[in-house]
Amino acid sequence: MTPDSYKAITEAFSAGAIPLKQLHAAARDRGSAWSVDQLHLLLTCLDDWRVAKPADEWLVERAGRSLEEELEEAIVAAVQSQGGKPLPAAIVMSLLPNKFTTSEVQVRKLAKDSSRLKVVGPGLIAVK
Image 1 (tube, helix red, strand yellow):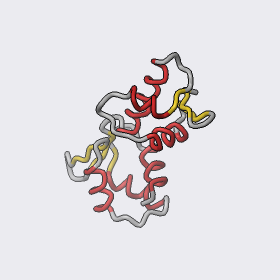
Image 2 (cartoon, one colour):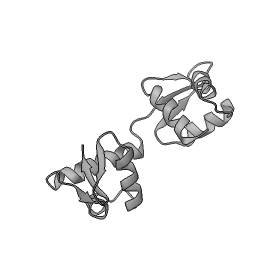
Image 3 (tube, one colour):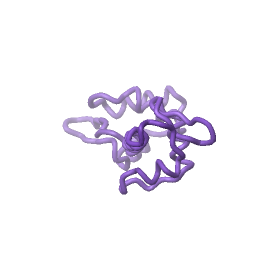
Image 4 (cartoon, helix red, strand yellow):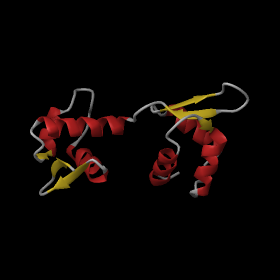
C-alpha cells in the first residue's frame, strides 16, 4: 500500500467504527495488494487507530488525532504565538513543545502539504 492510498483510505473512513473487511475492500479498490491480515497488522501498530473484535468481526476506528495532525496544530500555534508573521522553520522548531522531534525539512513538508499552513519566500512557514 502506498502512502497516498493509505492517506486517501484513512481520510475517507475517519468517523466511527467500521468493519476491517470494508476498509480492506477500499484499499483493494485503490490498487493495494495487501491482505486483510497485513492491513490489520498495520492498523494495530499505529497509534491513531483502534482495532477490536467486540463480536464476530474485526472493527477499526480512528483513536484520535495522528502525530502528524498534532504536529500541524503545534506549528500553527507556534506561528500564531509570534504574531502570525511567517517564520523560518528553525524558529518554528524551537517554539514546538518538547514532545515533538522533527527537522526543518519535515516542518516545511508538513506546511507545504497542509490545508492550514503554507511555505512562503525562502522556506518561511505561515498560517493560511
